[in-house]
Amino acid sequence: MKSAESTMFSPTRRRVAMALPLLGCVSWASAAPVSRAPQRESRALMGTQVDIVVDGGDEPLLRHAVDHAYAEMARLEALFSRYQPDSVVSRISAAAGVQPVAVPSEVMAVLKTSQQLFRLSGGAFDVTVGSLKGWSFEAGRKTVPPAGVLARQRQLVDARRLVLDEQAGTAYLARQGMALDLGGIAKLPILEAGMRVLRQQGVSNALINGGGDVLVMGQLQGRPWRVGLRDPRAPERLLGALSVEGQAVVASSGDYERYFFVGGKREHHILDPRTGYPTVGVHGVSLLARDVAQVNGLGAAMMVQGPQGGKALVARQPEVEALVVSGDRGAWYSPGMAAALSRGTA
Image (cartoon, rainbow, N blue to C red; front, side, top):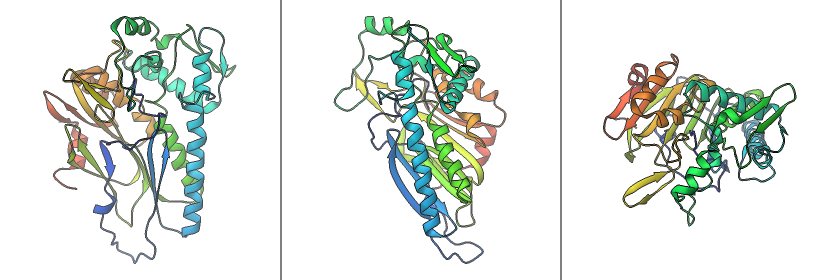
């Protein structure tokens, strides 16, 4: 969820997420007798906790499928992480202004998507925001860069200088000092790859939750999955719950995951690529869609755009429903989100 969101691929920590599965609130009874309980597992990946729930089928086969899904997601994390010096993303940044770097198809696909969203959002989403290296939101290393440093690094933020050659299979950052941060656009494709493995292994009903981004397929014990949406202004409180089944994704972005206060001002990890500073105006965005491609990176772009710009941006995506929580305007629901969200429930 992030135009400049550096939450992903950093040292793992448990974070408050705007969207969370309400597994304990689902009635486990269904029309037909249920012989096996759903299988659940959690592992550390991508700087957060990734949970998988699978339902229906032989337990050893389900666990085998879950192991394969985690293995695929870990493989992709190793390609995209800017915190691993030998990752493809790190190699692209290290070679900035020097030479193109060969990239696998998975990385090329995400980089192409990032360029499309850069254009769609008028520059609000920009993966070269990794060039803003002065910020740190890690425990014990929380820093705000000096204005002069930030101004110099801001000159390196420009996705138009990311050159992709699909025929040669290479990516190139045109100026030395530039760097990529795919934290806002790689997590959902990685989770989607995990879901694809589960499907290939014969699983029909599953949920994957990666730090508040939730993908589902099928049902849970014959009923829809339920996903609660937190109020980013008071994360202990739910704004409501969504009932989703078949194929769906609930993606969330917000200023409540990694932040600190300086002089009473909240400094958070979602950076505006146009200013170099954290976004203002919007506290959180939740999006509901059928496919990952419809929402990937969109929440971060909406936070950068602000309340009005964010609403206009999501209005251009007819199959995406949105919840936008801002400081002065409260919570705004698209018509479809307002209809889908059961409020005051958990």
